[in-house]
Amino acid sequence: MKKIYYLLAIVALGLSACQKEPVLQNSVPPSTKQTLNITLQTSDYQKLTSGYPKTAFSFDDVADANTYIPQILSAEYLTAANGSIANVTYNQTSLYFKAADSIYKVTTAGTDTGKDAYYALTAADYLLLPGNKYTDFSVAQMLTWLPYKFPNVANNTVRIISWTIYPTGATPAVPYTFLYTDGAWRAIYTVQPAQYTALGVGKYDQFTSAFTNIPQTMAALVNADVSITDTIKKNDIVYVSYNYYVSATADYQRVQPLQWNGTSFVAPYSTIATGTYVKSNGTWKPQPIVTHTLTTADIAIITSSNVASSTILANLKSYGDFESAWTPAELDAAFILVLKADYTAPVVGTNYQVVFLSYVGGSDVNTTYTFQWDGTKWTGLQ
Image (cartoon, rainbow, N blue to C red; front, side, top):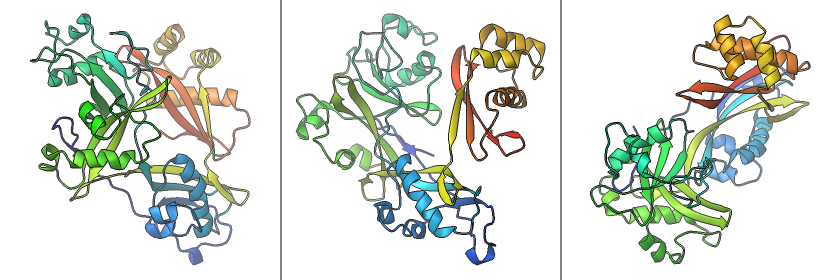
């Protein structure tokens, strides 16, 4: 179980990963096509001849993973033939969350462009909470209200919310930060004006690139908060929200995850990530991905077919989105029709991601299904 803190709120996280499946080089005939499922161990990172992952045993981001993992695979799996696939689990360092909508610009009260994390409640907003007649909320009520205002959001979505707080009747000097993670909204620890001042950035209450050690700084702030350290348990996670200024059009509210190691909070904090790599022309490379967003012409291909009932197809033709009546098998069949029409020379070993609109909870949500061509047929990977 997770523990997440904001003003004393707590969550516990456990991470697990499978062990590397042993492949003995001497037992594999030369030039054998293989499918490998690997979890990188310390010894694997040490196969690198240079680069920080050799000693850090993790990668800062996907780009670095795609640079170094092929080097590890080349050192360890020399006999794998072209067309071999490696599914690799590795450690990735999360310096901060920066969700797609986390740009922080204080806008007119009650407006929300979908790009701004900031939102100030209007009088009408309070009434979205069933049974509520008042224009103030406690933090607990706010957590109940958020799903009504933002019903369909991606994991790690950030919202900075300003509202009238019950029972004080005041608006906080610093809006609270809420993070949507693991299927729930949570109020998280937000750096306060006095803390910015103590760190020498109190003029604007924000960090810039001139401040070079932000993860460790966030750890020091939480380490100094006895209300947290008195109750924390080993491996508990704390999320810290802080403002980071890049420019007038790039002013971010970022979230730094920290982990309690039994003595103190530490950063950076590593998460488990996965990637797929394909051997082609003697070289390991990240698996190619083709993203295809359904077009009006694609919808016409589907609605003129018999992959689903006439009622379901008529609904798709009218609205252009896929209602919940579609089964996974029907969706697979529909998208394979499109792929056959749009990709007459598909590439083996490439992931083809079909992006479509699902009608969920009263609104359309971008949804992705993934397919591969094995040289003979299309197969869904859902």
